[in-house]
Length: 309
Image (tube, rainbow, N blue to C red; front, side, top):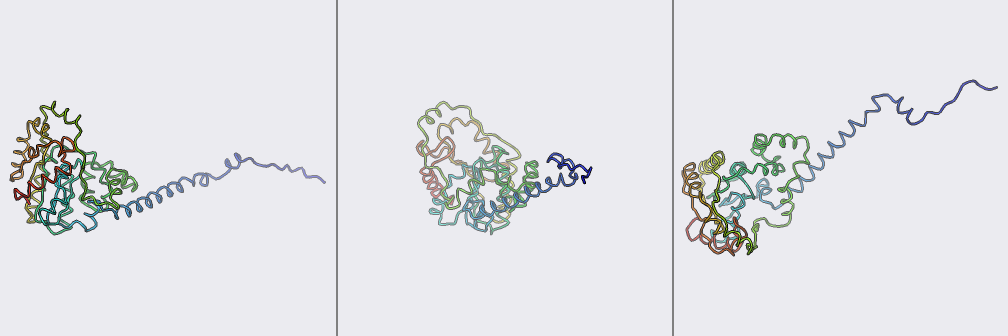
């Protein structure tokens, strides 16, 4: 006897079409959860890696930065080469100088320093850090935001989009030159961070054509510089303001440096020691703005001779 019932086999497409909607879309929250968990695990791993670095900002937040002489500023602050300063002063030195560091961003790290450590005897500030904002550098320090309420607040104010993006994605905090530099110093000592190259002959020749160069007077950054001075003084720290050397031809073309210095002195109430033209040998520079390690040795010796340390 034969049945009249017809047997059919459904295709994959038909099977999907008959799947309940709630089952069809379940992969979306699974995928989101997978991405979220992966982001948090990745961020945790990179944070642990960073915490093992010998980089100065890692040491700041790992209770390894106590010193007698604190140095701060932009890349020109690196001219105060730590081994030379320590040798001449017989004191323990720590530097918070960094390439392109503005006085407003630098103030954040100096605030953290004074909260975490006993006040140093002296704070040496290279004051040309108040001549440009360099807002691009702010997000680069997001990798240190988990350690600093001051840095979080500063980022939230100055770069809110980046701030909230790093709250969503922890991995985004580590997509920066600052984090890459911290990896560079996993096994190296960043106290030796200063170029040993000599300015090229081509750059020296070009420098003879320089003229009418200005340094910017930015009121907000002058205010930040003054706030840093007031903070240090309130803790009993002596503050020394310095303009580090420029390449002679660049210095000669810099027409408003004295106006800049006068503005700093007016806002801080302190004398600025102007060493902008103190080093005349071009071979002691790496470029227009920075001494090399050989120039730094001569510069630090001069500072010691002048009893700055």
